[in-house]
Image (cartoon, rainbow, N blue to C red; front, side):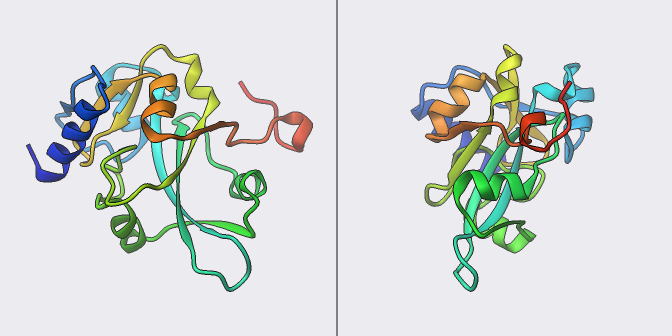
Length: 171
């Protein structure tokens, strides 16, 4: 097992997560490729997206992890409003690795060098089993919405605005 994956697996055991890390035959850099390999709906994939959150203009960016349903695209303006930030921007690979110790395409919800503020998309609750990355683009683990919130200390939110908030109606 890759050292990053072993670190994530150890943290999952510490947190009493029952689902074991599973190695996929091919990399899963997107929710669609992960879902195809796992034989599940794309919405059951917990995309781990790291953003740079800026509290105020000119402030130092802080990492923000958004665990969103693979069926969604994160509305960064909506997320910024939810957390009271001036801006939320997609992080570059160096920022992602510095904040998580993991590469884009394999960012796990846990196992980071220090805690990262985390938002968990409430739409993941629609799936009894949710698949999350495990520190490498070839690895995932099964979990649930409630367990993701618990193990990350995350905040359950709608990462896409609903129709009453100026967003499109959801499926």
